[in-house]
Amino acid sequence: MLAAVDWHVIGQRIFHPDHVFARALYTTVYIAVIAQVMGVLLGLVAALMRSSKLWPLRLLSGIYVLIFRGTPLLVQIFFIYYGANLLLGFTLIPNSLNLGLFSLDGAVVAGILALGVNEGAYMREIIRAGIDSIDRGQMEAAKSLGMRYGLAMRRIVLPQAARVIVPPLGNEFNNMLKTTSLVFTIGVYEMFADAEIHYSNTFQPVEYFLAVAFWYLVLTGVWGVIQAWIERRLGVSERGEELSFRERLAAAWTPVNAWARGAR
Amino acid sequence: MSSAAPVLGDVVMRATDVHKSFGKLHVLKGVSLEVRQRETVCIIGPSGSGKTTFIRCVNHLEKVDSGRIEVNGHLIGYREREDGRLVEDSERNIARQRTQVCMVFQRFNLFPHKTALENVTEAPIHVLGVPKQRAAEEANALLARVGLGDKCDTYPGKLSGGQQQRVAIARALAMKPALMLFDEPTSALDPEVIGEVLTVMEELAHEGMTMIVVTHEMGFAREAADRVVMMDDGGIIEAGPPEHFFEAPEHERTKQFLSKIL
Image (cartoon, rainbow over all chains, first blue to last red; front, side, top):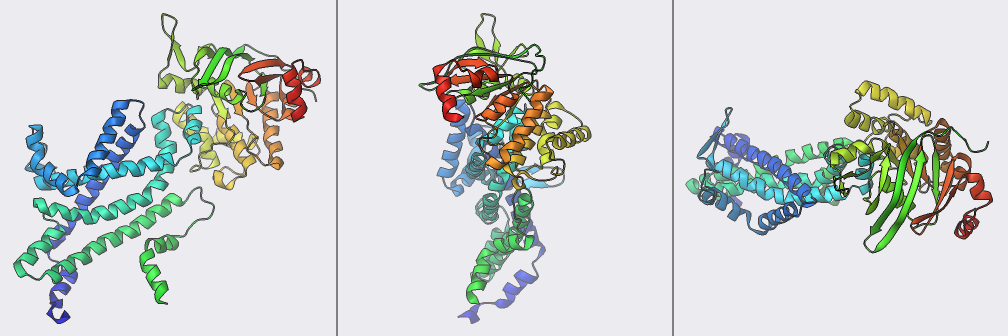
């Protein structure tokens, strides 16, 4: 059975990726990064709105989460790409967006927008949980020292909440790196689209999808290391005993470790 | 040494007929109190008598339902409309008022992600706009004053309860407040470290800081208070200098309370 697999192709795709693929990988990464940043910002705004004194803001925040967590991401991607301009009556999704340094295809813009807005709904819950985990006394202490809400949030509450938020945020970004593959459906040439096109030209699904799976693993693996480093940086203060970088790294590779320990 | 008798100045805090309810629970039923400059007032009384709620109203951590609280002649938390009705003040003004009235909490509420020094410099730098260098120098001096000159770079998590509370006192002092509020500052402490916090507070009282202290520490009240106020069931039932209070309390409820606690 395995003899039917063209190992040479897999080797080529993994060890000698061509420029087109490099470009597709780059597209995957920047879509994921921009969408995640957007998601965090939207999530933060929505989280703060949720605890606002003004009920319309709370309601808006609730509706946002209801809709974007309650409908499939794929539907949202299609809706935004094909429907947004028609619905709004103005050009939300341009044919191409020129940002000086580089220009974005309209499909990419729609993809980022859909992924970002969808992510924001999940991030709201994560950020909310982070803020709620901080003792109310922290906000009171900050206020009793004359700090206003915004300053107290920025300097006192959010930095502490970040330690609670970052681990699940890391998970979200891991997810995001892989979920970007959905935007191939609206014609964005990212890693999965590249694999899919090679497959339809060659009918060698195993080779191309295995190779692209490997590259997704590389991206999420690299991110795992970065995440471990960030979590270590955030854990430096108050904790009594400090985990070393190696221990954090080990924690990031828990699945692998568990296997290794079991094998021994 | 008997209680200090510094020359009292003008009225710093004036509360007039303050009422406060939490839902159906009527917690403050018309509290009126004046505190003068350099005066130390200890508020004692059984749990649930409204002591803590009252001082939380003084820096507007709780809203009052009616009555008024003034600090240095400025209404706290509210502004007066032309028709005489009170409406809640803007967040900016409330924040500004709070720089004058600093609170020391039962559970310290230090910022755990900042060192002792950063805890003290945080508000002076970011609220008052004091230059970093000067804020750090002042914070160093304040931490030395509360006996923690060697703990500047230590995070709260590595300090004992008594040390944390002393950092909290330094943090409040850094704002150079006109009035300091202490909300049962030793209630969350182990018995062996209560003394170190009370010593710092006694020094403050003798140096002429204006303080309102909600406490169960009768020794402190006797030693440092200029006036002791007994609260029960949402009102002040008796007030007077500590000698009077501990030797010849008038009110039956006060006698009961003191006999239980002393």
